[in-house]
Length: 216
Image (cartoon, rainbow, N blue to C red; front, side):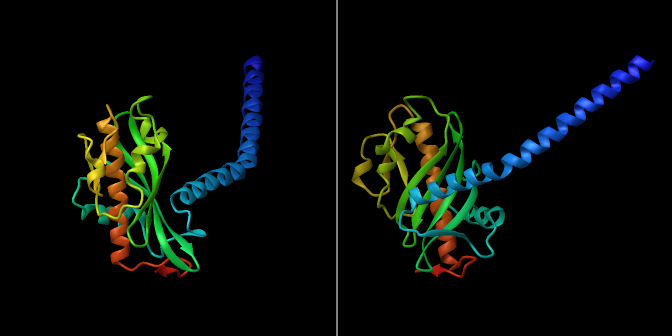
């Protein structure tokens, strides 16, 4: 009996020490990890909206309620898409555009997460893919081949449409699908359309940022 009690005490002491050490490691690494995550976000924002000097949250805007309401009014089925973050790009205390982070849930290999930049006048200004697990050499080209998303650069449309006949360059709203990866192409472009839909909702309400910046 004494041996059982002794072993139990030893096990308890080991568990207690391990718990304390894990807690200490968490406290030490929590701030650096948070800082690294914030740095990655800021880099993604800057990649899609180079004109902005800083980025701010929208005053009184809730991603869960506001973005969902905007998507519900769109002319596509965005039930597989989730808006996770919306910030405004600021320059000289004016909103020069918005960065909308989307998780497209209908990719061939699973969720595709990316940030989309839309200038204040509605012009597409870039997409930064944050995570993707599509097929190597096919769907992964959405990230590795700049010519796919490059088709959207400088376009000002309310919605893009994926085509498979090579006629994407014939109209601003047409986007040539990645060869052999129509599913991935459609998932990414629908996510971009979701971002454009959120942009239209924000502009229609003349939103301002928490810092008081307004749309130019």
